[in-house]
View 1 (cartoon, one colour):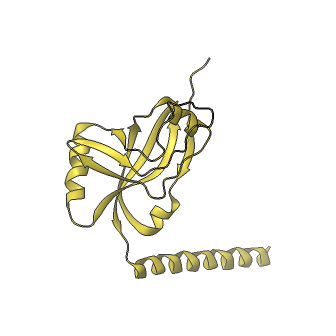
View 2 (spheres, rainbow, N blue to C red; view 1 turned 90 degrees about the vertical axis):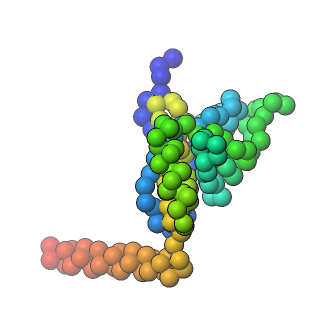
View 3 (cartoon, rainbow, N blue to C red; view 1 turned 135 degrees about the horizontal axis):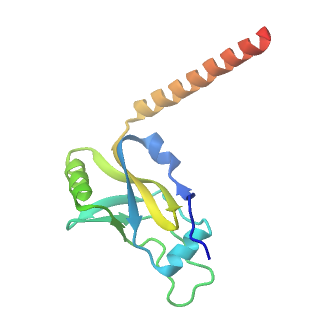
Length: 158
């Protein structure tokens, strides 16, 4: 059987980009049990409430929902358990220093398979205030309207 290649996205956290200003991103491996991997391969996961934290020099991912594997037996996994993340030590130290600063947190952006291995994209992020969110939405809407006007102008000229 040939090895997997490429990238297959299982879940994304679109709300994170709306609620947070992304400062920096990291790719980390995840320590999973067998039934968790099988459940992820079925494309079932939710990153909505997930967050990561540094504890004792190790990086942990918590509150990410990977539902129980339907074909699993009594040794199925707990859906919202803590999962260890795999990163280089210097990256964990850098993340730890950054999150100890005020206002920064670690949020998972996406969960995917890369060359057959489960990975999570983590972001060091700072929470947006309500007016920042409204301003970002307004800018996106204005850009969309400008693009529409330009494209309709091009269509009239042809």
